[in-house]
Length: 369
Image (cartoon, rainbow, N blue to C red; front, side, top):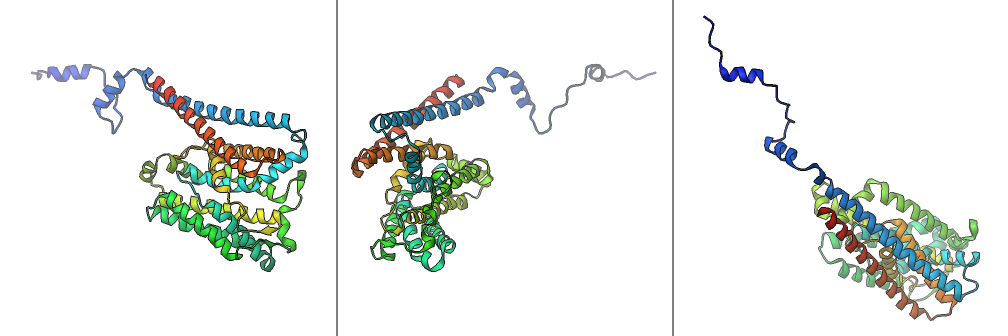
């Protein structure tokens, strides 16, 4: 006699086979995923995309509007403002600020800032002035950049490992570097008579100075490096979320220190170019770059909290400040008024940045709802 078949086994055999479950996923998780309405899943990514687009749009429109107003104002007031010669003057005059702002962009995007550049720039100028006659152009530039990088290294080590507030640290280094510049030349302004000393002030293609082309090249390379290199993406990650960067295995401390080194090296390099263009090394060259470099970066769309910004926006901010400075000089406005106007422009930039963040947040909230 055949054995009686098991009823449960018969039902199991007759029922269609169940779909295989993905390995490593709990059944309850699969059930929850299948029960969730598919329309609600992409809401957060879409909200973030719209938020970032709106942030960029608001900032670009704000800076563009400011620049348009400035150009129209000075064009009406000055007959010789919109000329080839004056455009060359604006670009040549913005070289020092632009070079310093390139380094400052890396640091601000990474979540820091450096007030010591106002002391490193004159230090670079006097170091270049005292070495170019004895060593030649290239060795003098290398010594200058190394000195600046050394200042940035000390600053970065104190901030990262000493856990001292960047504001206090960079203010202290501002005094140290600026004082060292006076010590090197005994407080005197020295004329540069070496034939190689004026290289960065020589005329180059399109009527621009050699130093201006150095600034343009540095800005292009710096922008590409910040946008597309692994190091640049790491800087954005650290500025946006330091804890997440540490969990991702990034060498956060080393990268943070390197941004201080890069900023100070650019400041010293800019000081050397300014001394070459002026054919004089003075301990007060570029002391106003502290405020102006931060203003240019923030005006270009960077956030002082880090993780936001770019080189193209920084260059637009540099050109805006350079245009304002040139126009006021042509109008024979006293230099101390320019400082007041620069501060007002910085406040306007921060206002646009705040409006950008508020609009982005409101867009994200609406998408989430």
